[in-house]
Length: 223
Image (cartoon, rainbow, N blue to C red; front, side):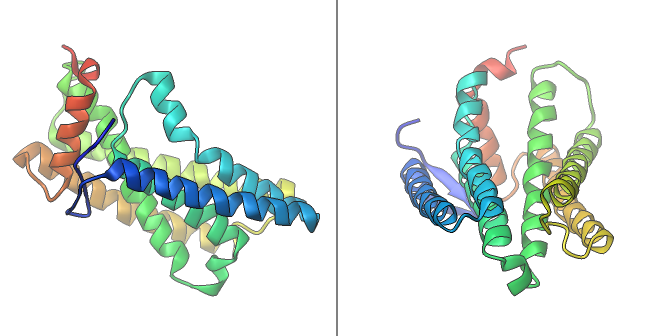
């Protein structure tokens, strides 16, 4: 992508790509050290979580290469931070137990992120004249998309607890329901931002990210 001008939380950053590479280096170094420690201590469950975390850090770039899509640098950074904060700090370092608000913040954040992903998916189809939809319909799809993936994540947590003896669900049903509720809060926020963007064309920093995404992926919007 070269030198980019990115807008993360409204703050202009002259080299988002450099920040992205720095974060990847730091996160992967920490994970490799934790990997070596878990092997030395023969903590195989811990090893599994660290390995999963490490592999997920490669997904955004693999997705870009496979589907020839330039993902906004802000989103790549958020994915890295979220995965590290959720699977490593949350599950491996027990931040979910140490800080009661850790789970809430991450689930609200994931709801916002997934809501924006759902919005982008339908926005691509909308701008390419593949579908004819009203702004409310696109916003509602964004909300449903985020909630659906949030439910899939809860199924993943249940499966990990059942088959590998982990404790990702913590208090079981209560934890699952609160996770989905805060997912919904984040999804509502993202879908509302998407709706306002379609109606007004300018919303905080979102319009700059979307406009850059359109510019860097012209093939997606061919009519």
